[in-house]
Image: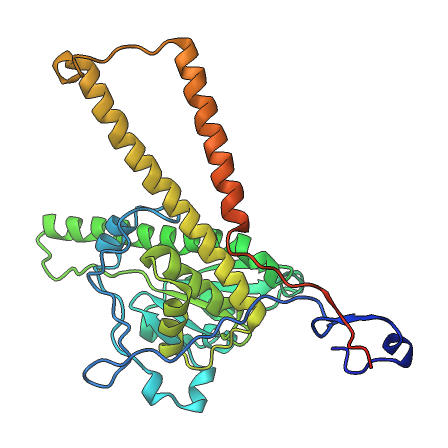
Length: 337
C-alpha cells in the first residue's frame, strides 16, 4: 500500500520524501516466461538432441552416459502446444520419451497405464494427503507397477525434494534398463531373436498435474539436460499447456537453478584443478620441464609481495564499490512558499 496523500502536519516540515513510500514487503522481480521461438516449420523450437551442454554430472549421475544408454538419446517426439484441447488437462502427457506428467486421475487409469507401458508411478503430494493415505495409485499396485511418493509439507520443501525425485526416476530407469538388457542377452543365448529391450517409463503426478509434479519435471530437465529455467518451463508447457507456475514456484525453481549452476561450477573447477595438478606432477617427474633459472624467494620477499597484493586488492575492491555511484537522498528540501 503506497502513501498517496500527505497530512497537514507533514506539510509544516521543512523536508519531504524524495520518493513515494511503500508499506508492502519487498518482493523479487517477476520471472516472465515468453513463448518459445518457432522453427522453420512453425513449431516450437525446443529440441535439444545432440546438445553438448550437459557434459558433466550435475545431479549425482553421469548425465551423458546415463542419457545415452538408458534413454537411447531421445528427447521429445512432438510439440503438442499447438494442438492442445481443454479436455486434455484430465489426461497425462508425454514430456520426454520416458517421462509423463499428469493429474491423479491418470494414475488411476488402468487402460492408460497398460497402453503406455508405465513402469513407475511417482506421486508428489502434501504430507497431509500422505497421512490420510490419499493420492496413491491402487490401479498401479494391482497391475504390479512400482509406486513411490515424495511428501512435502509445502512448496518450500520442494527444493530439497528435487534431488530425491530425480534420483528415484533415474534409479528406476537404470534398474529397468539392466533387467531388460539381461533378458535380451539371455534370449540371444537361447536363440530367441524376437526379444526386444523395453525402456522404463515414469508417470509423475499430483492432484492437478499442473503444479508440484510439473515443477519436479522442470527440475529434472534442468538437472539432467543442463537447460535453464525458461527453456525447461517452455518444454514442459509445450507438452502440457495446463501447467501453472505461480511467482513463488518460479522463484523456487530459479533458486534450484542457481544451486545446480553452483554444482556445475565446482565440478568444472575441480576438473581444471585436476588437470593443473596433473601437469605439475608431470613436471616434477621430469626436471627438464622445470625452468632452469627458477630461484627461490626469500621469506622477506614473500611477505613484501603478499602485503603489496593485499593492499592493492583492498584499494581496488573499495574503489569498485563506490565508482560511479551517485546515490539518492531519502529526503529533499520542501520549496518555500
